[in-house]
Image: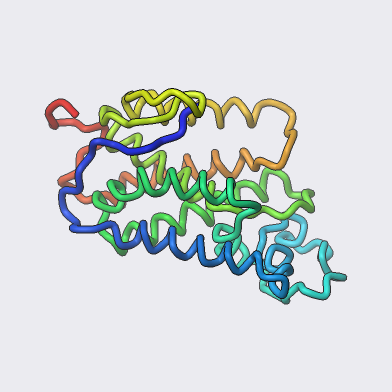
Length: 231
């Protein structure tokens, strides 16, 4: 419904969002590697497959391109793979617009740990909710959902430029833009699962991000913009 473009939220403590940009670059580089013919086994090897994670038979055991990888490691590796350029672009756009201020509120190292924990937790949530699934889970959506939850809890009053319905540029508060996104994820897990989107991973990332921001943010950053002037 809304495609984020930019926000009016300057950095306060860090000079540049090195981790956010670094994560975007890593995702782009790995996606480029996925396009190399010799690397077609990357998804089979590094995605989270719930049945395999919980000790079931290997789904892609006959793939000549598959690389033996400990299943627990896929909870980290899956979040750097993407299905196509639109999957990658959407996730990286959200990370670009909202990641810098979350990194600012935590510091570089804590933000990196936060991002990884959200991604791992999102993958594990997905696997626990659909343990019999043999479909590979890939994408940064779960980790980015954690960033979205953190931003929403930190800066709900900040104005965000978005494309409404992918067409009309409008400026709305983060509470509206991200709140609608959060509600959409919650609604989608209540309907029969259709299509490739891993809604439970999104919800898992949101919940974990909302919990961790309380402990990872610096004390000088109040939740919900409390104590600040108009955003």
